[in-house]
Length: 276
Image 1 (cartoon, rainbow, N blue to C red):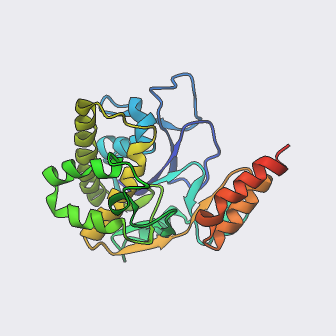
Image 2 (image 1 turned 135 degrees about the vertical axis):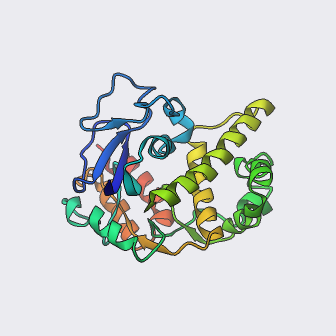
Image 3 (image 1 turned 90 degrees about the vertical axis):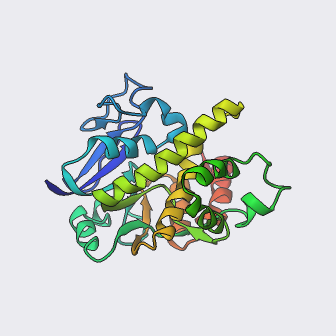
């Protein structure tokens, strides 16, 4: 049994960073059978998969594969093809120098329950989804998850509400923990999301692209808080084309915690005035 495996979700050919314990996983493989990602396992390589739902579940199709099909590991984690846990936020052309090695992540788990991305500030009002009806439609998807929570896990509802009043949270569904704890989380997560998806379809509510991926960010933070898990946080490094000016602005803002506030403005400026 391996001590740890870190899966790196990707939907297109990409560079795989990290050591030998990091492995690419092709998400949405069922939707794009002609796309080949070298060295990647496909999220539909086993019969029990949700690969075809990648449009609304995003990286969660990788999470589902890891839950149902990976059993020979003590600890397990998920990163993205352009997002990794790093030792410090800095602009670099050599990501491998700041990516946290899998061995270090495994060592960390002897002192904590779970590893998440360093909490980032939320964009917009932190109260929004429940107390600001002018800005958020009544049928906001975050509210529509409540019937499923009330039915399946009523003990989580208060904590779920509270999560929307927190100024920060961990994003991207990136996590590392023991496989046992991971399986417990996936049982919670997918039972809620599948129940909600069924209810919405029966009610004629459309599930927007990436919607389940966004909801799960709140559910992960809710679950960790509800279980009082001892958590270690690492910054999340964003690795793209480091020659692009927009990337440099984005990463500089990320390193000082202002990306969620000024990042969109910087991107618009780049697109309008600097992009050739």
